[in-house]
Image (cartoon, rainbow, N blue to C red):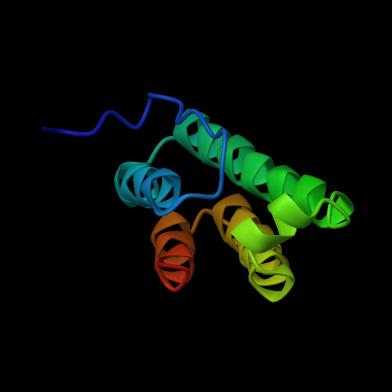
Length: 100
């Protein structure tokens, strides 16, 4: 199946499946519009990680994704966003791939 970079990835979690979809779309994104979509997806990853960090007192949340891993995901999403803004989506994809 061919990916459509004009498709916006729905980001509702920090799962490997979500990250793989963003990575795949980063690798085929070339137009400015595509890069804006990728930035928004990375913003969503960054925000979800922030929400998880803020809800750490909820032990069920804390047990699902360790604090250090959430911090790392958030940091990587921020750096990947900056790479997309610099029109380096494949570099951003490589960075995200390290999370898998």
